[in-house]
View 1: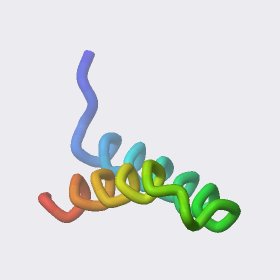
View 2: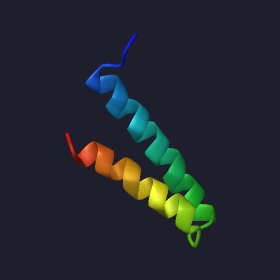
View 3: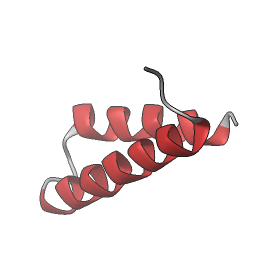
View 4: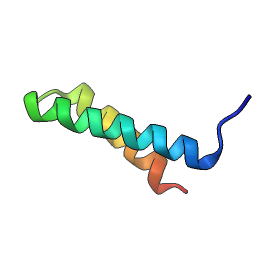
Length: 46
């Protein structure tokens, strides 16, 4: 069972929201920032 493009984009958007919230509390965290960049690029590639 696979994900539709809409479901995938929804999952990535949800994860991005949580990453942004985590970065508010720890803006210097380079790992979180890099992960956010990766997830953002996944949405932009479509």
